[in-house]
Image (cartoon, rainbow, N blue to C red; front, side, top):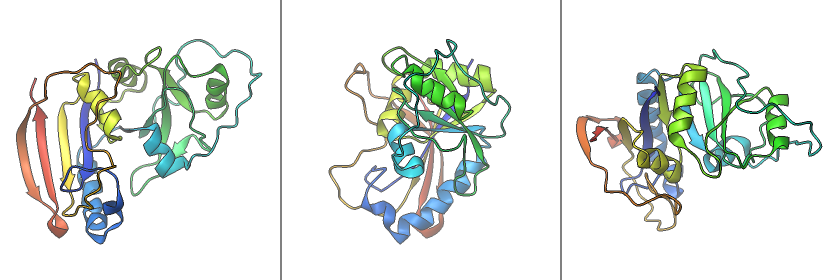
Amino acid sequence: MRPRIICHMMTAVDGKITGQFMDTEAASIVNQEYERTNNLYNPQAWLCGRVTTDENFTFYHKPEINENASPVPEGDFVAIGDAPMYYVSVDASGKIGWQSNELKYEGRPTAHIIEVLTGKASNAYKDFLRRMNISYIIAGEDTLNCTLASEKLYELFGIETLMVSGGGYINGSFLNEGLIDELSLVIAPVTDCASDTVTLFERADYLPKKAPVEFSLLAVEKLANDGIWLRYNVKR
């Protein structure tokens, strides 16, 4: 059992998800529509990767860890199991320097933070999360196991609808494991022609090559300021 997973993203017309285009008025207006459409799904959680978290929320603050901390209990740590909203942060090695156990963003409900770690995360980092009262789950030994993470988010926190809104590699990892049920794509009418920024889906080098993923169109909607909202089911 796992949540229904929607990959909900805003892109430029060339499929880029970061870059200078994000600073334009066109993208700013369409971003309001991105938030509106996100809320229509009534999710219990949204998920991003470490880079997205550091660049937008923690600004590369270093965690205050104690290298001499006593060994923490094995397994996962549920600090709050009934929060109205969760922010799920994929942080395989344990590097993010949180200063609170909750996140406030745009008009979304205040979210309790869940860290998704792998076996590479140190005891000292897990001790830091426990002292901060931040939940964490272990999903994979050396690399992220998205399937296991999804199952734990459902089982331990009751998350039934999860919005994946990460960088290209996080999105690609969930797609690679066949976990994305719907693609919700908000397109801003702008591009900066950059060749050094990531696209909607990227494949990490350690992931196996798989056949191209096909989609079936659910709906098309024109948004404010010439934006477009595309919804697709993922063909199995």
